Amino acid sequence: MIERKVYAKLLRWKDDPFHKPLLIKGQRQVGKSFIIEHFASNEYQDYILLNFHDDPDACKLFSGKLDVDHLIGSIEAYTDKKVDGRNTLIVFDEVQECPRARSSFKSFAKQGGYDIIATGSLLGVTHRRNGKGEQDDALPPVGFEQQITMYSCDFEEFLWANGVLRETTESIRRDIREGNSINEAVLGRLSGLFRQFMVIGGMPEPLQRYVDTKDLEEVRYLQDMILATITDDILRYAPEGEEMRTLACYRSIPRQLSETNGKFRFSKVDGTRGKKDYSNMEENLLWIEGAGYGNFSHSLESPELPLENHEKRNSFKVYTSDTGLLVRQYGKEVSKAVLTADPEYNMGPVFENAVAECLTKAGFVPRWYHKSGGDDRMELDFVISLGGEAAVLEVKSGKDRSTISLSKVRDVFGIEKRMIFEEGNIRKDKEGICHYPIFASAFIDELDE
Image 1 (cartoon, one colour):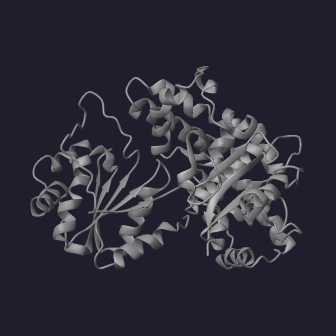
Image 2 (cartoon, rainbow, N blue to C red; image 1 turned 180 degrees about the horizontal axis):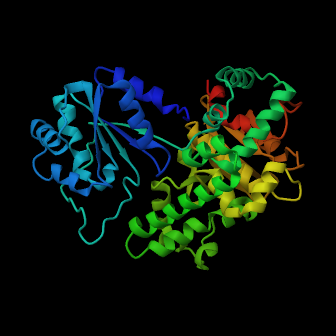
Image 3 (cartoon, one colour; image 1 turned 90 degrees about the vertical axis):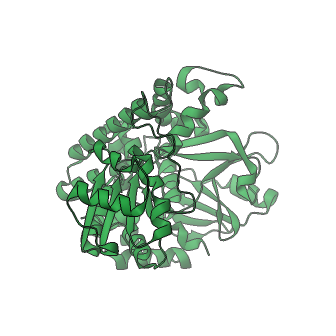
């Protein structure tokens, strides 16, 4: 079974005597339901599972008053299982299908005495049709729940799944933190595994299948199923009347990333142009972001802290949340090129997407900066807040090792934290720029002092 970091977070939640009901949110098929049932089996005497997607009638338990004693009695009668206080974990699976179940968190939090965990996908973006499941009085329990966002497996979890020891990943973390060169044999092995990570991705089912079979065809089959599910979700839940445009926006992401500088251009979706393009598609794009299917990187007016104050609302890149799904959309030939490091292919979009994914999973918000004119023109792949300072990250997938923009950003904005992620080892050059292997982006939290 794949070891997930979220399990430790669940343990901390359980051990906190003042914990509130917990919501685990994230895109579909990242393993939310599986890890919660595994946690419930290991850490509780018993658990009760209400899956509102598979069992819509369970939602009727919350159609009346949300009094705790009344709800517990109804849940026991419906499931024929006794709730023994905190010894029984109550799980609300796919809670977006039953908003009043989430609203009940307020009552449970106020009364205490029960452990509740809910999982949810598409929270905040679900649009119900034809009155199905409509619950107008259901309000999010603001202040009465804790939340954890769960992603597909990160690169460290991918390494563990493929038999890499924790001691090895801890050693890599130490080398990155201290700026030490990595043993060349270890460097080669991890670089190869990162290429596999970019092709297989972190979605648990394809990853587990690869671990069990080493068969990439089976991985691709499962990835196709996940992509089909994304399409189904868009057609079912996207804003009514905007389903096809939302789907077109999502399907355009691979093509958008392959264009010069990767900026999302609305003309690549349906040929529209003009100042109103963003307002015309804003709802579609916000849906993709809210559903967890895209990692958005906004352009900056200036790469200065606080970065959020300098964002350009209408200028951004959209990366897929899982690079394995991006490579699958590009096709089998690109998959082979990534695995073999074929120099004939432009790997820039794939490597940049992978770094954006790693940054997001490590808890950072990726942004970028571009100035097209003047003596100080420059393009910076990523700008993040790191250790209380602005840090600039460049991704080098080919032979180009120029550092012109990184030199300018120090001269123009005084930014000293400058990093290049490339096919190479850890070192610092004469310009003071730190070089890291591309997979080090997955461990960048080690530098967040």
